[in-house]
Image (tube, rainbow, N blue to C red; front, side):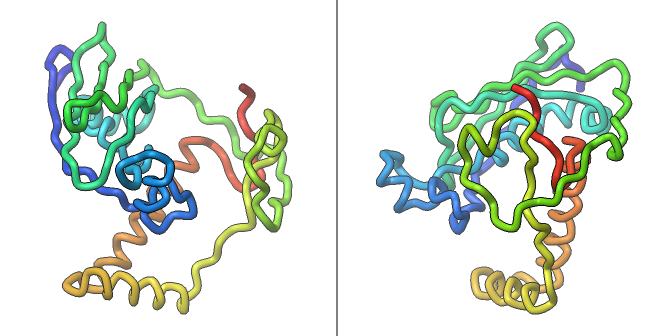
Length: 206
């Protein structure tokens, strides 16, 4: 596929964060705030938008592409999302619609050459706080150290996670969930490298 070809992608949405500490993803809490139910996380909507972009440029875009995304309206669990991408002078203009409502827009592009990643050693190391501070203008000010104490997954925790998933989806083998967990860890690690950050790195200037 090339940018000269428009493409569409339909996906059944899933809210994978019902149990998140961000209660906007919980049905009851979201309804109290005026929404019909818990919101599908923005990171998932972003993933929907990425689908036609990766289909167009593949690994090259994952290595040195970019995309700006704006979230306009909520996307709800169990609905269909229609993702459209069209050529925009060598870039891709992407829209995400659900139930006839425009929920997100994005513009993706492929850089001509890969930028040289800065050395991780160029970041000043600062010990992360033991407890995560509340998000406000002070804790998220430009130049403020970000990060919390690394979370260590023990065998006991892994066993409890297995038990939760086995109860929710009994037909799924535990081994499959461990594989998925490993994949999630790899994606998280790759995402961190993409942002070129680590525990104790600083927030970007606004």
